[in-house]
Length: 216
Image (cartoon, rainbow, N blue to C red; front, side, top):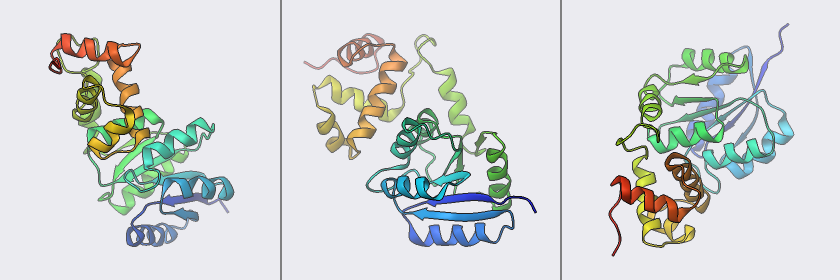
């Protein structure tokens, strides 16, 4: 008998999480070995349950999905991580992939497609929902080397505008209703995309590129 694929399901919506677990349990080759309603709780569950793959929502309280991926990778966790979410936002998609997620599927994915995707990821493949592949391709063609094109996402531009006004990480988080860790992730991506060594240089380059207006 083949060894079952061990899964941990992390989602803050209880009805969806329980429904997903019921769906996965009906698949003969799957075994759900843990569940959690936020990223912080998930870390302990993952450590104690030794899964083969993690199914993770993006938007959650306490610690969101992207922060959870970052923390897992910092802990040298090499397990495949599949983001299963309703979000098609570029920030969420690229943030998750940059943090180290191996797959990104939308919650309206058909059950058979989800089963196939999980098995492929356990075998070392990466998976993207067809609905978000265009976003990734656009991001790849809008990098720092693309001349006059804007390499930053809308959310990164918002963070950059806050930086130009001299806001702290905490102030930016309050202004944009996102966590400080998420702000730091956006700032790191901004520095990488603009090839800047610090926040001041990033603001200066963005003004020169016409991405933001100079603050008087």
